[in-house]
Length: 428
Picture 1 (spheres, rainbow, N blue to C red):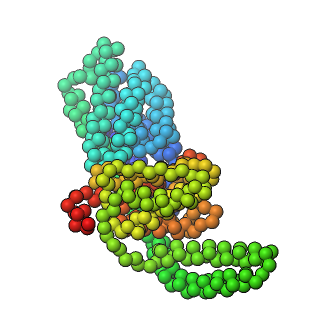
Picture 2 (cartoon, one colour; picture 1 turned 60 degrees about the vertical axis):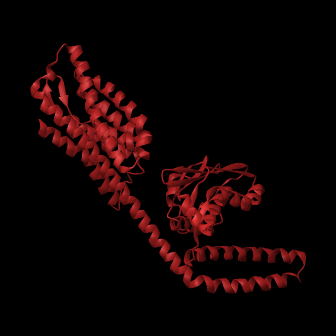
């Protein structure tokens, strides 16, 4: 019987191996984007567990069907867990038997607990997630035992409490915990590998762009400056109708200059002046700089910061990164809108949110932000955001985006907190 439960452990881990295989294959199924596919994978895992159960007594069977369902709720969305639940309950109804209704009760109990802790689970560290996985594995075992008790009461039989079954129950509880931990650990490892591969690809592309910028930017900028100067001189002697065309030419040259400046920001090494930076003061200074631009676009900007938040870094780089993000938010708002710039402490990190009410983006667009030449603007190169990513990384921070099409975008910056007051006094 314990051998059957070990088979269930292998069945439960199978979707994780499939996820890894399909993700690495060039003809990948894109499971991290296809939530229905995730639900099908883990739902089929539950069905296989139900197909090969451990029989105790008549009417009493053990399997680990609820472990894949728990994983889907913790990591998936509505489409994935609804698909998995439909497969589990549908197959259980197909199998029939006097205890078929108990699957609905177990699903209800598990869903309440899992959905209540899902947000906390997703925001936790890996070690805390593994600890929570152990508790959830034990709760899945407890839920099944509770259902056994209810069914036994309705059948006026306590056959499942025989002493010879205690060893099986112990193995069942232990394997539930092991299965949850192994599944969480494998999924976290796979996700970390995917993120690392994406980061390596982005870094390689950034390096190519930097090399290209270093080799041609200066040579292109010089003749453009000369051409712009001569056009300005010539336009003074032209009539008003012809001067309009000269203004268009100057405007296009300025746009070319802007693009080249983005290239140079990527390529040139910048000297750093590391110093403590007070977040609230920096917000005030940045909003003064951008207030006129925001006013022209009918955008209101509000800032809020917890007191005494400090970071350690280069003032110019930090200001440039925030200005780029806020400027992008202003440009994403087509008519009238609002931007909230917030800063708060979270552990040993300063978390900065730039929240706008702009047009928003799809998940696919968010995933491509920071890549060379990708932009959602009509006139843009995408290099400005690449520069922003690079500047924040140079501060030891991390930049992420959350967005919903038609509802706006939130840029989230995480930068290490600079705390000791005695250290701040050294720089004053």
